[in-house]
Image 1 (tube, helix red, strand yellow):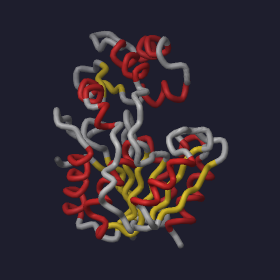
Image 2 (tube, one colour; image 1 turned 120 degrees about the horizontal axis):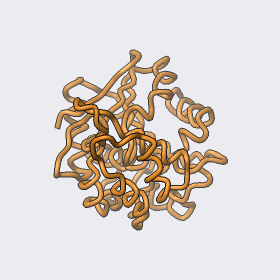
Image 3 (cartoon, one colour; image 1 turned 30 degrees about the vertical axis):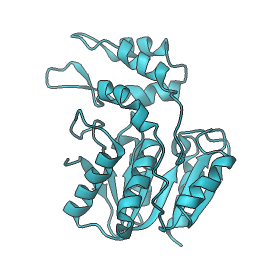
Image 4 (cartoon, one colour; image 1 turned 60 degrees about the vertical axis):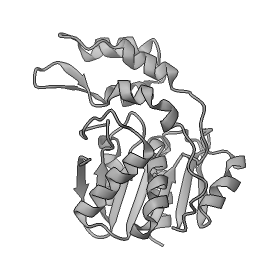
Length: 254
């Protein structure tokens, strides 16, 4: 699948993959700063953002989508960063094509399978009935019955846009994402080791990467290190942007 992407800066390629329910716009602020050092490429994964929708959705497919983009842009010695679901895509890609990477950055995502925990978000998104005349304020009010966090609400509502008929539409394929949630939450294949230098960044207040997870992570990624950003949760890059960027650049520039 040909993915939508945008780029800025020049030099070594630095590819960024967003997480579940996100898209490339979420990373523009960090991309502008990183573009002072790198050719930054912001990617929309399938069924997200401006990339095409598909009934097929898996990490194998998303890794192959990324491979197609690498080949199209003739990318080599790439620094690949992925957050959450994007981190799992990045790890899958590294297992298949580590020769094309110089470094890997995985943001608040482990290699294990995760239990279902997006039920409230999915229910809230489905409760927003897209219809003629629907406004953003009404959509936000509906979502508020399911999602308390103002930051998470705005993150999700950023996916609403006005189509050619001026009515609100989603940038993400909610029915497929809901159906494929077991795949999204699945574990990484433990059989394929990755020797690319890898940085795992976690938020101190997040439970995605626990201390007891590190042994299994390090077994698959022998050349891995772990940074914990104090006071941050799962959206560590948004909650502690200065500390996050310092960690990324310290790892990538050395």
